[in-house]
View 1 (cartoon, rainbow, N blue to C red):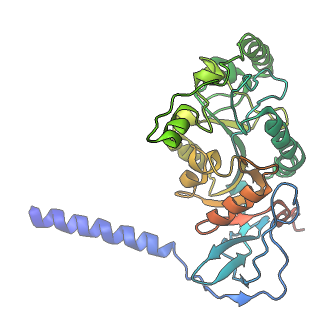
View 2: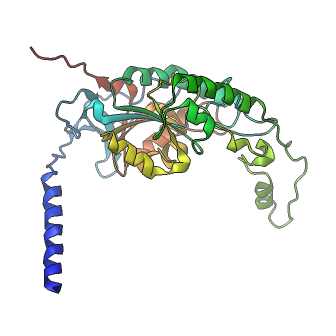
View 3: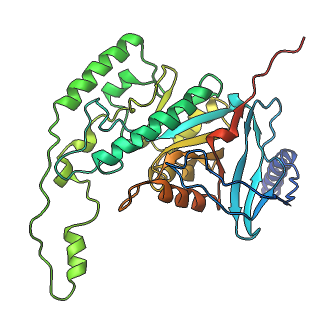
Length: 353
């Protein structure tokens, strides 16, 4: 009996290895130097500082789907190769999801506002939120519109759970509201956000610090970022955060709720035959990598392409996000593929006679 069980186990393992081996192919890691390369991420220099690494190589196509109609050139950085490696990729659009991380509707007229006089949210000041909204409106939204109806899914991630209001507003993993429900949800959202008090405490006028470690005590009492109820007002983060009005949300677009965790998102994408993800959204150094739909999660199960000019990093003590965004994208390029909007090209396929 014992030997029979061992034989069965060995057989199962062999079958598993055989099945996975049959799914593998040999990739020729051939690196050809690129002469006179142009800067990367140079299409939107107001938002992302172009990357001017000149030690660049061309590699063969990595993703090469049968019947590919979505062509995504991408790059990564390798210290061992001593430079940037670029490669074409040929995807099936129907197997691809376009995901936008945290397009928060903050200070956009829907009613959810940065608390005053010292509250923080999203890019942490109303002025920086408005500046980021221009990026959403002028850069990201046109990109989404160009691929909607071509890719398999368009999704947005938001904090919290699927509350009753947003359940009426947005399609989710389990619900698809009617036009009437969306209209009702919009009215309920406006009323809910309007009736909240966006007023928190003033900055402290005095701080208690010790003679021994005054710097340590200073930052404990007065940190650089405090989004708690002290400055944001109790209940602020329990409000139903909407998708920004700078995005044209379509009825078939899907909203992901962070509190559900990564598992339901993974399962939903797989159930819809998604294998590739084009990732956009905010902020490059925080939610874009670490939340439910961030690349730390998605890259465990899908081919993920970070759209480097369709994201912005936070930028404390700076007048522009372009340098911090470029730095965080460059760091991510050690373990992820980076693309840019102009490198994502859909090929209209016509039926042969």
